Length: 77
Ligand SMILES: [Zn+2]
Image 1 (spheres, helix red, strand yellow):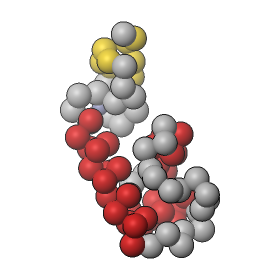
Image 2 (tube, rainbow, N blue to C red):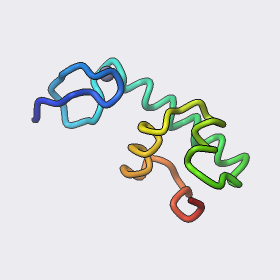
Image 3 (cartoon, helix red, strand yellow):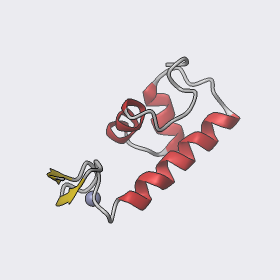
């Protein structure tokens, strides 16, 4: 395991994840939120649009996309 800096809150932690234990539930909520938004409306033209619609910041959004956490998005953006 590596010593890492949390991508959400910036604290240091030991894990294989990108975020600390405190932020893991927040990541999961964001991902669930994004997936449900995309189920209802997949006409987003950019990551910025999706960020505004979901309230998830762009850094986190890009991280989820890179890790393939958001289904069906790659073909649209
Ligand atoms: Zn954190």
